[in-house]
Structure formats: C-alpha cells, structure tokens
Image (cartoon, rainbow, N blue to C red; front, side, top):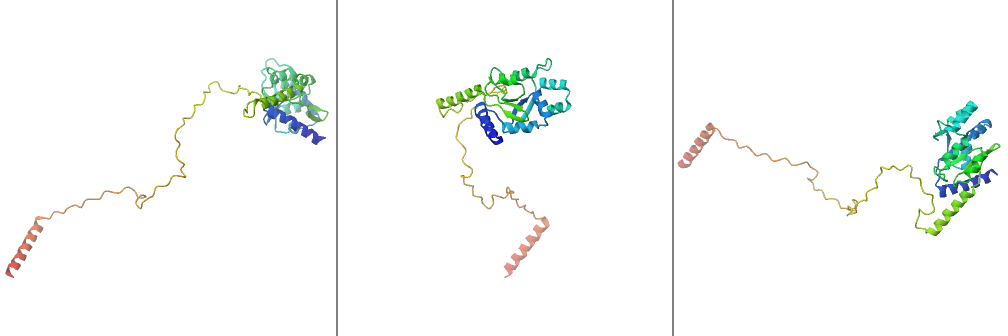
Length: 254
C-alpha cells in the first residue's frame, strides 16, 4: 500500500507542477494542531512531509499559529515550530485563529498565488480550501501522513488548461498555463534595448595569422650613431707636411 500511495502522490504533484507552476522546495504552511500532533506521536514532521509530497519541503508557520502554540506552553512543540521559517501574516497586533489566518494567506481572490501546500488538522479549513484550485492538502491520519486527492476545482482547472493547449496550437507555449504573479517585479525596471544588428566580426579561428619576420619580435631599432670626426692637432699637421716634403725630395733625387 505504501508504494501505491507514493505513486498516486507523485501523480498528483505532477498536476500541480505542470499546471500551476509549483517548484521545489515546496512551501508548506503548517498549523499549530499538526505540530502538536506530530510532536505527541514523536513523528518527524519534515521527513514525513517530504515523503508525502515526493520532493524537497520547506515548512513554514504563521505568526498566529505560533501565538496559539505559546498558549499551550508545550516547550518541545514550540521548539519544533521555531525551527520552521516564519511566514508574516500581518496579524501580529490582532492575532486571528489559525484557520482564518491560513485561509487569508492562501486564498487570494480565489487563487493560490504563492503556491502553498497546506498541512493542517482542521477539517473546516480543508473543506474551504478545496474550493480554491491548486491547493495540495496534507494531514495526519492516526500515525500516517496522507495527502488528499485533488479537489474538483483543481481538476477542472487542469482540464481547462489541457483543452486550451490543444485548441490554442502547439506553437504558442504560453497557452494553458497559470499567469505568473508580477509582485516580484520592480516597477523601476525599464525594458531592455534591442541589440543593433550589423556586420559581425569574422571568426578568429578562420582568420589567417600574419606571417612574422625575423625582426618582428625584436624591439624598436635604435638610431645609428654618427661617427665623430677627429680633428688633427697643429703639431700632427706639421709632421705630416714635413713627411710629405721629404718624400718629394727623395722623388726628385731619383
């Protein structure tokens, strides 16, 4: 039975992945009743959630649920809840019951915009969230954590998505998917400028390298120094003249 449940849970999560754009790690809103139940049964809540949703889990708890846990004065349950990421619900000054708090952050204009998985023991809360498409519901049944089958609202949304893909054509990839929330976009962002088209540079691998000569790798040539002329002194000039005269006399005598 455990293997059959794992296959059915994997099939359900694929619907949320492909139709409603869920991504790992899955954000799971946990209420105070589930924390108390798992703590009393010594059940590892994080590992149980990961086995149930067949993926990486990111447990989160609201401020109102934490306030309800503080009223129980169960220190071990409070310590377990403190290890989860805190989800701001803006009810800190005026805390609400856990089911009203979770419903306010999950059901936003009839949509699960933040793609939360809800793990709760409250039967009334699960009944209300079944009317919101794309909300996986997890709860503890005795000592076993189970996931509810996809609600009718979820299956209708998935069927409409598939029909839109078939009728819209195969070329349009945006048809049939839930619109992405634009809350994370910055208003100051400007549209990117289009790149100017022009002649592309040649492939550097196809360009022939220039032939290098023997002197190409040498540094810049130094200018040649002019040979300085050496002027003879007057004594050397007289000696040369006397020597020339002696040669003339010898020539005449011959």
